[in-house]
Amino acid sequence: MQRWPNVPALFGWLGLDRRGRWLIKDELISHPRIVNAINQNYAADEHGRWYFQNGPQRGYVRLESAPLMLRVEADRLMTHTGREVRQPTAAYLDEDGAVLLATEHGPAEIAASDLDWILQRLQVDGRELHEDELVAALVEPSGTRTRLMLDLNASTLPVIRLDADAAPDCLHFVRDPQPYEGEKVSTRAMD
Image 1: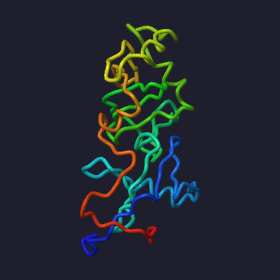
Image 2: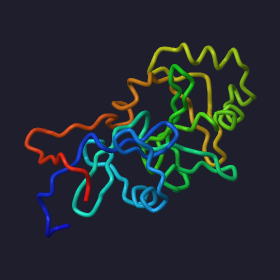
Image 3: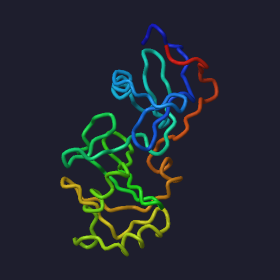
Image 4: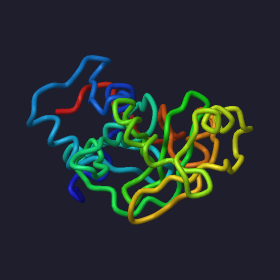
């Protein structure tokens, strides 16, 4: 990479949807080798902009939700890039019931298809959650610690109510990355 220090970054081409699927110009990327290459070379810069490193070029990713999507596999949380989450440090609930975690890999949302798994792990005062307690948590003001606790086996985390629009600032990521002034930008797709 040192041979090409001024390769321009690419903005507006790549995306990640709420199901953990990669998109290019809003079209699904389905080729397994391409998906695998993106998964292995996906990271964040110092500004919280997530990107795919393609050789010397960075392709910044528009996020529908969070930088990482989580799925439950064999009773473990796995990122859409194939990494196991072992050390979540915070749990958040947005106004629509989506659950986000701060993880060792970055901010992540649990896939809607796995919300039943999460609901089974939500507790209030050490007991199973009642539906009215979840409803009460959903209407709490953003930034409020709810009565809910999320038991993820290795850790039990308090659940903070957090508006979806506030998640990027709180969890330090950018949903729609833009170039900074003076940053070299390409208008061509990655080679």
